[in-house]
Structure formats: C-alpha cells, structure tokens
Length: 611
Image 1 (cartoon, rainbow, N blue to C red):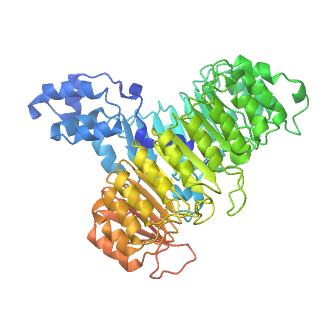
Image 2: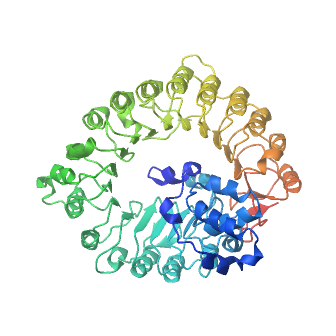
Image 3: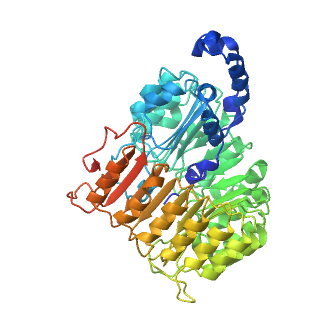
C-alpha cells in the first residue's frame, strides 16, 4: 500500500498541467526553418510561426492533443512546441516514434507497470525498462532537463548514462521504481552539477554499500527538493548536514527513518527556508539520542515560517508532537499516515490547522478523530484514511460515523480514500449530497461482499448516489456487497468517470456490460475477483480501443475468449499473465490489455503470453 506522495502526482495525472516555465522558449523564423525546411515548403509559414508563439502558452496536455488533430499544419507546429512529453504507458508507443515526432522535449513523464503491481499482483521482472527510452533520447534531446518515471525498471547503469548524456539535467523523480541502488545514485549525483530535484518516492533502492549522500559535488548546491524517505538504509548524516547547509534554495526535504528527531533539529536550524518537510524518525535514535531530550524542537519548527507541508512521523513518540504546534496554523498539507496516534493526541494539533487542504492519517484516530477534523478543517480538499491493520473481518476504528462527520463538516472536499470495515448507504448518500464537488471517491470496505450493516441491503444505492450527485467525478473505487444494479448506476450517470476500480463485486456479466457501454470517458479499468467473463468483455469491444488499459485478475475469463478479442481488435495488445510456476491452461489468471501503435512488445518474459 502506497502512503507517500506518489499518488498525488500520478494516479490523478489527467488533472495535472505542465508548468508554463517549461514551455518558454525563444522563437525565431531561422530556428523554425532549420527544423522544418525553408519557408517555401509551407505556404502557411507565417501563420505557423504565429501559431508556434501562441502554443507556447498552452500547457494542458488534453488541449494540446486537441490542437494536434485540427490539421496537418497544426499537428506539425504542436509537436515542435511541445517541451513536456507524457507517455501513460511505455509500451503504447516506441521511443523512436516519440522522439521523431517531438523534437524539442525538455521533460519526460513515463509510466510503466499497471497500478496493481503495487499490491504484488504482478510477477517480478514483468518489464517496463527505462533503458530503451534512455538510449533513444540521448541524441535527439541534448537539452533534456527533467525525467519523471513511475513503476519503471531503472538500473545503476541507466542512472550513470542519464547523468552523462544530458549536461544540463536538473530534475529526476522516481516513483515506485526498482532495479537501482546506492551505486547508481552515487554516480548520478556526482555528475549532475545543476541538479535541482532528486525525489525517490516509494521506490525500492538496493543497498550497494556506497555512501551516495557524500557524492554530491562540493560548493554551493542548486538543490530545491531532496526526497529519500523510501531508502531503507542508514545514510551519512554528517554529509547530509553539509549538503543541506550549502543548499540555500532547498524547499523540500523528506528524510528516511534513520534520521532521528535530534538530527532533524540540526537540519532545520540549517534550512529555515523549508516549505515541505518529511521528519523521518520522530523519536531519538538509541545510538545517537544523547542530549536529544534537551533540544528545543518547538523553536526549530517556529523558525521555519514558510512550512506548509509536514509528513514523516515514523515510529513516533507522541510526547514530541507539541513541537509542531507553532507551524500548524500555516499548514495546508499534513501526512500522519505513518503515525500511530489516537484521537486525544490528534485533537490539539488538528484544532490549530484551519488552513489544511490535504490530510492523510491512520484509522487509529477513530471516528472521534475524524469528527475533530470535520469541526476544524473547513478548507479540506483531500482526505485519506489508511488502515493500521488491513486484515479482513476485524473491528475497524472508523466507520460510517466518521465519514458522515467529514461530509457534514468538510463540504469543499474533492478527493477521498477511506478504508473501513463497515459502511452504510445512508452515510455514502449523505456524502454525495454534502460534497457535490467530489472528483475522486474511493471507498474500500475491507472484507468481501459486506452489506449495509444496518439494513442488510447491498451498497448499490450509496454508490449510485455518488455517481448521480457528484457531477465532476472522474475516479471511483467500489467495494462491499454490490449487485449489477450498482454498475447500472455507474454506466448511466458516471459519464465523466475515467478510472474505475472494482474488487469482489457484481452478479453477472451484465455489470461490466453496463460500465463499458455507459462510461464513454473511461480510460483505466481495474477489476479483480469479480464474476465477469468473456461475454462481458466482448460487449465492450467498441470502447476498449479508446481506453489506456484494462486489467482483470481472478475473474472468469478464458484463453479462447481472450484470443477472440485479440483477433477482433488487432490494434490492442492482449497479454495473458500467469504466475511463474503456473502451467498454461484455458483459465486466464490475469489479463492486461492496452492500445499500442507498435504492436506486441519484444521483451515479454516467459510467463506472459501475447495473443
């Protein structure tokens, strides 16, 4: 389960826009002619030059995609002015095709494995290698400055090549990536003298025994963001302290659990300009904790007057919580998803957080804690409540009581992820009415096929109310006891839903048929352990081509049915995935289907069969 900032940037990426600064290039006719030929090649050269200058200010990916479809001239100019390239599936297009069309890219956003890889539902070594993209970009993009990768396989050699190939490289963000270690990080940071951002978020970093923190170049650093809270190894704190001291532009710093609260104090004294802070271990280290008790942590926090985002708090000792009181009034984001605190420990903090817009927390705060949040945080836009124990069929400290309190007190809410063991239709309906601006609604009722505990009825009406009353809804995750009626509601009213996640739900193939025929904007569909089979999938063939991907695991699909779909839709890649130790039979364990301009990939492992 991912509980850091990874999902903020990635799972709702359709709503994000590229920053304007990445599109601000100088434009002149000579440069244009050099790239596309002489003016006589294109009678509309003057109009294209004007259009080129205008498109520099168009930052939305969707708007740019629409512009490129107007005519051949606009298609050409849009490609020339696009500086930030987003590829939602690394197998949807080849690196060569992308670099041939977009020749002036400065920033690459690339996504690999589907989201269920986060939950160990995909065998290791499935693919999504960064290396082919890196090799293809080296010559066409000498001015590349930024790479954002999610669920990609990155090696130490890739990191070294990245640093060597792009002399002006500035930003690297690795979210849920694997395959690299401290050796690769050391090589990368030592060669990137203009590095501004190094964010390692929920990635698996191999410990190669290298002190990578010490490898940053000496002298004043350009670092603006350094995130390494996912690194499960001790770091050289003295080197980190020196790095922070010579980074006057540093705004974001998230530490791992090997940095104690005493060491945090020393870093905060060096960097009072921080706006985002991940505290690491919010208690003393046994081996380095002498004197930590006497430090005035409250003064250190008070000195960070620009602090608006707090996270971390691993292995927390609640006695240290009062230290953050001085910054609470200014906080817009607070992440307690690693802090096992109760309602009484939360109340003195949350009562001061009147500006809070994003709040992540464990369900250890109980319904009482959520009621305290509802009473204070009137500006709240995003709430995530994670389980401290994700096992099924146990008592959960949060319920419909906490959800209803949030819906009544935080009516500006736009996004919610809520794990619980029990929920009522009444509470979900109340949220649909009280929070009509919801864009993301993810309710995860742990335990399979759980009905409304008060009425004994399925949760159909609750989810039906969400899609009916929340007109801006683009992402929905459903759970609990659901019949085909719930999916009929989703297909009828969820016209803007782009991402739908389904687990242990539905009666028959009709449920999936309602969704595929009704949700015209659907881009990503994730289904597991549900009674949908070949007939349901065939019913939505006309829509599948326009989706980014469809994932189905432990459903009722057969190899023959998937084969028929592959023949009927040759532009779709149909992958049948089995466990590495499982023999091939007619039952399909996992289906991953996505559109691609290139056809089947060539790096599929043996347990992946492409039909």
